[in-house]
Image (cartoon, rainbow, N blue to C red; front, side, top):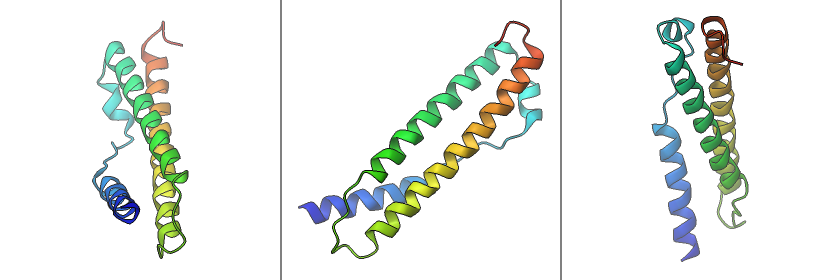
Length: 108
C-alpha cells in the first residue's frame, strides 16, 4: 500500500512539473495593461509563488524509504525545479511591480 502511494506520488509530481508553464518575463507585455490589470497580475503571481512554495515544501518533507532506489534524487530534483520556478515567478513579479510603480501613481 505504501509503495503504491509513494510511486503514484512521485509520478504525479514528475508529471505535474512537466506540464507546468511559466509566462515569459517581458516588460512589453505589461506595458499594455492598465492599473487594475497590473494589480491583478501581481496578485496572481503572488498566488502562484505561494502555491509553488507549498508544493516544494510538501516534496521536501516527503519521507522516501531507503529501499526506493533513486527516490531521494527524484525528490531533490523536483524540489530544485520548484525552487527555480519560484525564482522565475519572483522575477516576473518584480517586472510587474516596476511597471505598476511607473504607470500607477497610487500604487506602493
